[in-house]
Length: 280
Image (cartoon, rainbow, N blue to C red; front, side):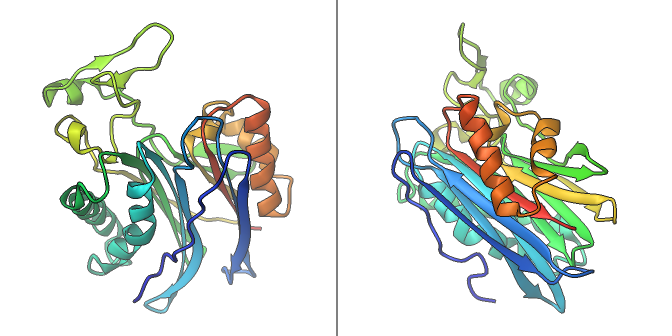
């Protein structure tokens, strides 16, 4: 199958951005996508990576879209960019059992990342992946707080699950960890990590989960767009606000840039990565 995820890696200096676009055949004409990645104001290198492309697979056309939001370095999200989709499509017959293929690939990819330590460092990454099958069926999976939001008749539908320490406090404590929430800060696992599920993070792995939540949806004539983005957007823009901003911009690359600009205008400090997929 080869490297279906590509090797494009954006190493961005402060204030710089990267963007692009593409399209697939779709069920009635083309499905278009556009993306943008903008380095945040934090004093560390860009740690967001993405995948956005269409590939042939067993007589079908798959749209592969993902945002990988790294922390404590870019090695883990770069590894995910290169390997996660390949692993999903190698896990038996994806089209026969997408749920199993995705779950197993997430698990085995995390095990591979941990086994490569210290080559990949002590960092980790969240992930949200979206697989579009023949522009008719959508499968979304995620660990962490990057998010996928679908628009149907202009209504925002969240397709992913935000994995926050307070929400999964019981699981963390059952694994011997704890959740702290210092005044003025967000809840963190063992006072360190602001998400309860992630790839990597070897030092915290005994207290973290890396199994994804998986959802699916039919793509109907009422479905307008899908937005896949890192929490640099979602910290300051609601699901419905994002849909309202993007839905009337026909060019999905311009829509992604508009969303990133809005997040910056609202003083988002984090890296901002966004993919917009337009179905009609």
